[in-house]
Amino acid sequence: MIGTVIFSAEVMPPYWLLLRHTPMLPALAFTGAFALGAWGLRAVSFGGALAGLLLTVLVSLAAGPPGFLAVLLLFLLTFLATRFGYAQKQRRGTAERKHGRGALQVLANLGPACMTVAPLLFWRPLAHVLLTGFVAALAEAAADTVSSELGQVLSPRKAYLVTSFERVESGRDGAISFAGCVAALLVSGMICAFCQWVDLLLPRWFWLATGLGFAGMLLDSLLGATLERPGGLGNNSVNFISGAFAAFFGILIAFLSR
Image (cartoon, rainbow, N blue to C red):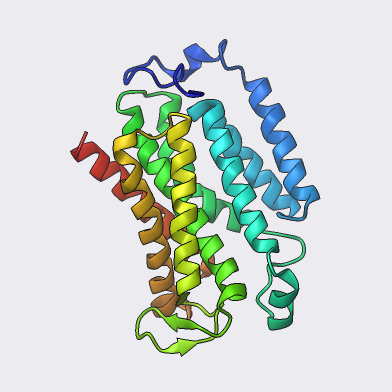
């Protein structure tokens, strides 16, 4: 498997000693091309591309090529979901902005995963415990975006407010739908299955990370209904908290069950 060489041992030396094996220049080249591609596709603004570049460089140095590939998969899944039924979303006024996600949106979605994996730059004990939180945070980011984007198209008038199950229009803060929930669970599993394949995630923690990705999506909807709609929290804050929730409990449960 791709990550076997990188994560074959629980205890490894500080990452700066390994830079001769994984130099920074290739990391900058691949992540730079990725950021430019995302900007060219208008998936992110220029500021979003710069924020994404910094975060993916960090992930690439801390988790190696498998970490970069996991972020790339997250981008592809969310980009395709955002473009799915775009004309319909435009008519309803819920489509993503034409210039893409801004820097704060990118930080809110990738920040929890990056904070979780950053210690691996210098400290390698319990690497797979930290990586479980990293994968769970990526799964939550994918589940939240895909469930919202697909739910608006597949269940435009069959969404329910997560707090009261009152029927509301899809795309509203705190709204969930059956189609969106199924999509969230599937995409969370896809992220975790890929990360398991590249040795970022141990098989015994696959369902843990998948479940936390889905649970984080539900928390996002709950916060959207109770705090975001009244104006207590912004969307970026809600996204960050939900990702941090998945990362924290991924690390905690993996540590306790290792």
